[in-house]
Each structure stands twice: as C-alpha cells, then as structure tokens.
Image 1: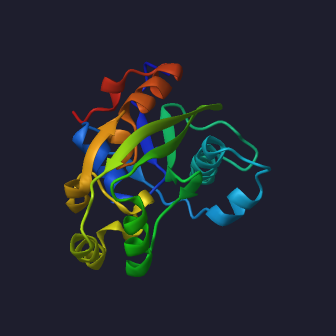
Image 2: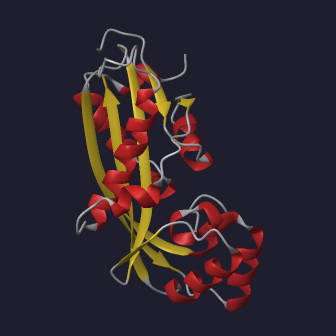
Length: 212
C-alpha cells in the first residue's frame, strides 16, 4: 500500500476532529456514520470502558467503509483508502459520560467534575484494504475549580453540548482545564500518535497524507 496515493476518510462530522487533521496537514474526506450508538452499546456484554469506545469507533468506521466497497460481495476497500472512526467519553466516578446535549446537563456535570480528575478515553478504529486496526487512548484531565457563574456562562454558549465530558480543550473550555497528562490531540477528539501507528501497520508513512 505504501506506493499508492492514499486517501483518508473521517467517519465523523466532528469539527474538532476535522481541525486536528487539517492542522496536521491532512485534508480528509468527511463521511457521517449514522450509527445508532445506544444500540451498539446495548449489544455489548458487560463491557469495560475501553470496550465501549472501541466498539463505537469500530461501528462508525465499518458503517462508512461499506459505502466505499467496490461491490456488495467485496470486503476489501480500494487500494490506498483508509477509513478512520473514533469515539470519546469521560470516565468519572466509574461511569462513562458522553455528550451533555443540553444547558442543564452541562451545568450539572460541571458542578460534579470541577476541581476533580477524570480520564478522557478515546477509541480509534482504522480500516484499510481488508485490515482493521484499533487502539484506545487515555488522558487524565484535571478540571479547574470553576465558579458557578463561569459554569453557567460556559453552558449558555452551547459549546460543550456536543463534546464528550462537556468540555473542549482548544476553545472556551480550555479556561477550565488546569492540567492534562497524556496526548492532547486525543483530548480534542483524535490521537495523532494512534493514527500514525495505525498507518504504519497498514504500510503507509504519515507524510503520504500531507497536503501537497
């Protein structure tokens, strides 16, 4: 595969994940997966947190990969095509939390997590040819002791509604993150080190995907 002119397909409409790739010199094709996330999780038997995010990332990648198969009988993607799926959740109090979706839920979560440490877990699934690569990255997050006023103001912006853990690192939410231990790109939504390792397994060099 290393000799081809490769394409990367992002199985997500996340603006944060797209911005990570663009900042790293890659202009991917963007394809929403349309996966029923609740159904994927419900089908798992006694899953660990890693199992959950890995299964969701894989389901997203598989859903989009189906649209690129040359025919209904083939299970092999076109040469040089790489599909990437990802899913992030916050692990706190032994429970996984996804997107808050509403102002009220954002406020509730932030009142619980301020001043505390949690883990942002991101599952990655990459597909190329007939191969699948998966990996989960974990990053520790130290939340600031945000005031009630700042929490309410942040929630009112709507920014955290579509973000795992009800925060962003790269935008307004960055004011309320005191420290991270791990990969910052993973916290934003897509780990560049994980993607590099997956591409290497597939026989690619990351520089093959850079905009020329």
